[in-house]
Amino acid sequence: MRVKTRKLTLGIDIDNVIAKTDQKIREIIRNTYGIDLSQRDITVYNYHKCGITRQQERDVLNVFHKKECENVELVRGAKKSLSILGESHKVIIVTSRDLSSRKATERWLRTKGIRYDSLIFENRKHKTGIKFHYFIEDRWKHALKLAKAGTKVLLFNYPWNLNRPKHPNIRRVNNWKEILMLLSGI
Ligand SMILES: [Mg+2]
Image 1 (cartoon, rainbow, N blue to C red):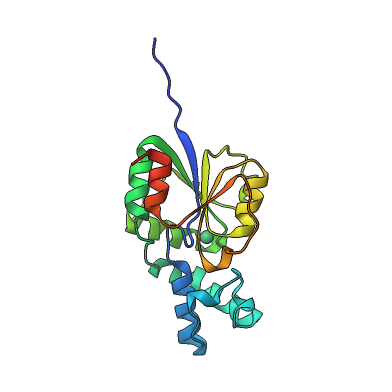
Image 2 (cartoon, helix red, strand yellow):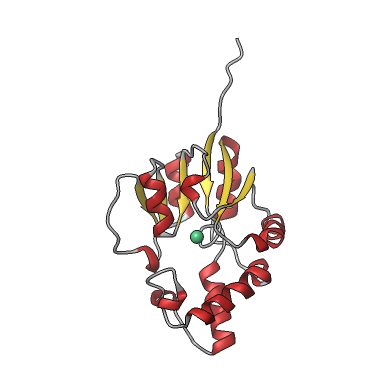
């Protein structure tokens, strides 16, 4: 009898999980407004609460989604880890990026050689209807909603998600090496 094995599904965020987005956003802010923010300054993932105005944030994100999202560096270990995890998991990338960045985002993922099965643009990450085995995220608001909906979340530690309450479905990680160990025992 043939036994059908079903792959476990992983939900993966892009910004600050696969892509070093905060670094690029702060670079755009520095080059445009001469405001030099360090990653430690970003204690909430809303740049208008961390040293720039709402309008400046809108303009910066516009530049990011239109152009600069193609010039972001990879988070260390992301490419290799997704390549390994993709052998035994279905990898679904779920991003809250503006839909206008879809083509650029797809090009970037292809150029960087990221292995994945599908790409979803959805701000309500807990509303995709997909049963994720684990979801890898860095934003607290997404992590908490996913966790409350019953999804296990691996939350990348960053200054913008520290000092938040604990949740039984949220486990904190520092890098992709830890994620690989947790998910594949490597
Ligand atoms: Mg993110």
